[in-house]
Image (tube, helix red, strand yellow):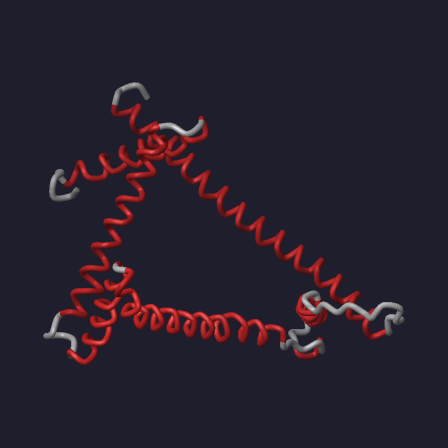
Length: 231
């Protein structure tokens, strides 16, 4: 774009294109129409093309260049990638199972490791809070202790909500089982409040994005009217 247009035209043309595409996307509010489909196709095509260019220049080229990457590091991934092409033919698909197994195993290991050390362990550490107000600043010590107690109670009850146990027919429910059942029900309320807060946060973020686009449309419309001498 910058190579085809003069520098002083790059920003106005980009603003007009963004304005038109935004209106095309908002036209979906009136129902499915060719303008929305065109904007959707442009978005997918541009995103896919940009992704291919980035992968080609920043992933494939650096790893295929023998001047910057030792062959021992390039050979195994290249071989696994070539084996994937055998999946296109059913009679040779077993050869590509090696690459698929490697991808699934590596992906599962990374997912488990990420969930364990990136989510579970930090959350467990976050619940290891002191209930003694003396461990917090004197001004907010009591409030922090109450917050810590609510966090610990909510975490334990939420975990107990996934504990399912059915007593034997005709057998009286013990006090411990009743407490576990009550804690599980309380944990479900904590989960519902958490889901509600997360959903509200998502809605607020989407509304802020919508307001941003509406503000962009109004500002751009004012600029275009001034260019046309109508504003």
